[in-house]
Amino acid sequence: MLYDKDIREPLFEFLEQQYGKIRILEEKQMGRSRADIVMVLPEAVAGIEIKSDADTYARLSRQVKDYNQYFDYNYVAVGSSHGFHIEEHVPSWWGIITVEAAEERMGNEVDFYVLREARRNPQMDLKRKLSLLWRPELAHIQEINGMARYREKSKAFVAGKILQKVPGELLAKQISEELFQRDYTQIGRILEAYGRQRRRC
Image 1 (tube, one colour):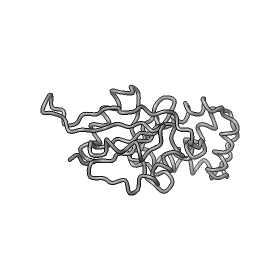
Image 2 (cartoon, one colour):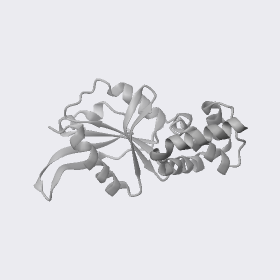
Image 3 (cartoon, helix red, strand yellow):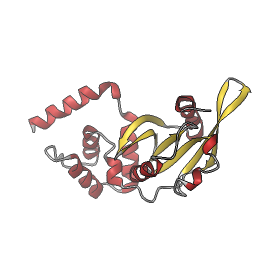
Image 4 (cartoon, one colour):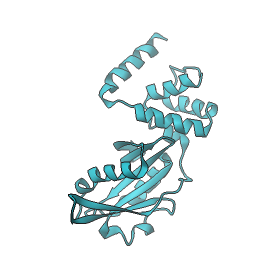
């Protein structure tokens, strides 16, 4: 039986081999659920839910609804015990990656198989996707697009203005670039500096 801890790290390596330039963010809050993995691609953001052999489908319908609001593509990575039934529990546009314990060879512990590639998510809400960004990251998107600063306005207000100003394809690239550049070691300093600038205006 494979558990989440057996799957997670090898899955990161598999995704890098499969998709090239990516960045992995873990345990990202989205709506009422938490995405196990957010995979940042140069022009898209994908959500990945892990269902190990020890997991059930009890929360999956709620999670699917939340993933569908936030990400361009979605995948579920499932232990072999779920392989025959997972298609019944996720939409047809979700990708499916199956995970199996590997044979004793070359030091591999698990094998991954792309049972179904993801297709673009028709339910993604771009405003929800923008909410994944920190306020200073939104401010940078405003700056590079020559927008007013709206420093006293809410994050939701700013996101709405960005959606009005920036074409979708360009915005997708800019969101990905912000997530590629995100530095969690500097978050305190970044937010503090942004707060000082906001108070000065």
